[in-house]
Amino acid sequence: MTPTLNRPEALAGRVVAAAAPSSCFDRELFLRGVKRLEQAGAPVRVPEEVYARRGFLAGSDEQRASALVRAWEDPDAGAVWCARGGYGSLRILPLLDFERMASAPRLMAGFSDVTALFSVLCGRLRVPAIHAPVATALGKMEQAHAAEAAGALVRLLSGEPPLPLRADPPLTLRPGKAEGRLLGGNLATLCSLCGTPFFPDLAGCVLFLEDHREAPYRIDRMLAQLRLSGLLSGVTGVALGGFSDCGPPDQVEQVLADALSPLEVPVAGGFPAGHGKRNLPFALGVPVSLDADAGVITFLESPTA
Amino acid sequence: MTPTLNRPEALAGRVVAAAAPSSCFDRELFLRGVKRLEQAGAPVRVPEEVYARRGFLAGSDEQRASALVRAWEDPDAGAVWCARGGYGSLRILPLLDFERMASAPRLMAGFSDVTALFSVLCGRLRVPAIHAPVATALGKMEQAHAAEAAGALVRLLSGEPPLPLRADPPLTLRPGKAEGRLLGGNLATLCSLCGTPFFPDLAGCVLFLEDHREAPYRIDRMLAQLRLSGLLSGVTGVALGGFSDCGPPDQVEQVLADALSPLEVPVAGGFPAGHGKRNLPFALGVPVSLDADAGVITFLESPTA
Image (cartoon, rainbow over all chains, first blue to last red; front, side):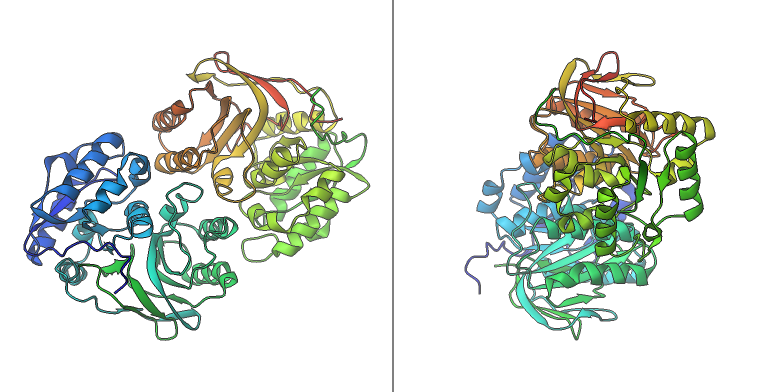
């Protein structure tokens, strides 16, 4: 066990508290996602404040930040689950007292825009988290995929040992094996932290990336920016999830391969996580072993204490 | 006159050399733009290498970088004019010998993706440039707007004193007056430099921003990133060009006003420059006076020696 991880406790019969740090959302879709997680075995507490709205955001920055902290510190809750991604986490980063949050670590689940929060939580504070569908995404999924994702999320929240994540199908962009803490998430959200004090230290880490509706030139631009900023040096390997609706898959694949090859580390694509049909939950912030030939991420430690 | 500016000479009867540092482009559209500039009085030299192509780029990074330097150093040319924006300038920044380029300054014209080059040229090297339609953009414009833009570009290339740029109609987001060197350009391109060594020092500068097809949340995200990176501190005023096809104009305006208000400097919108119907050429890198109440940018010095 890496002594430097600040592991939260598993759910252990407590509720999951919903929080909305990002965009406002469709209530019906959200509640369908909540129902699906509950059917999979985790009761969800939905504070009325998640329904706040201000423009495209789920309330003002102050509202979203304080609601997130309330969910985090809810004594009845064993985890925090984000309602929707979209955009907005970046705006509340300067308002959050991360040291205080780290002093009572919680297991947080979400993806996409939530990457901004994970970057500080998993990166700087070394509190592991769960990369998983947000509630609206779970609500929107086809039934079978939703059941698969909800079941896997409940197992991780409950502290069961993480299963390997297998690429489907494997796509070896650069062969080899790598080890390191798994960090990252949504490329555009991660890139929006570039230059700010909130970008995670990726040295010695395996980087996970996924994205949605970003044209190939934008993917190239974001990776060029990260590389020119020196923020990818020291990355030991790259695991790619879905790049859904980003243009012709062969062009996207070529851009990813070209942009990541200067790193000279193993790069594996095809992991069923992101904005595509399948979005399998997995642990962020924990040490993993990436096998880019077989297309497998093996989790070497549990995200929970 | 500010002694620290490194002014290029005006055209003085020489040709304009075309260069393609960014995306590949439609030859017909490009040649229509070239013809329009020639009809306005500036002969254009088109090296065959601008037609190179590699994926979505106008040739490999090495090709585009060396072709740009050849146009820059062409003894028969008095200015360099970019063929198209799109994407690609960022990729060649590490390949360019900017000190060498600054030792023989040239007047460069373009916009959009060319913002990446301007950020180093006008920002770090203090070589003024012209924010103006690239050739394909001039080729695509309605005839009357193209004639207006081509005429203004030829006048600036020829060293005529810059005329004020007037907002049409003025949109005062924060009243007041500001002075400083005018820097900036396309918001997304500028933002792609955030964190890299190529972002310009904006302290004491008036910042010009425009963009195209960026949803309000993306505009907000980019401005939040720049602000959180500390790169906007010291900006004395902000002038906004077009934000075309970025969503409902009132929502875009609200996002811009909200995101820029923490700077506590004059902010004026409505300048006819960018990806909209009108794209009036103006000098970048020179001291200006911004009147956010009247919606006027007055150029205090000439971009040319």
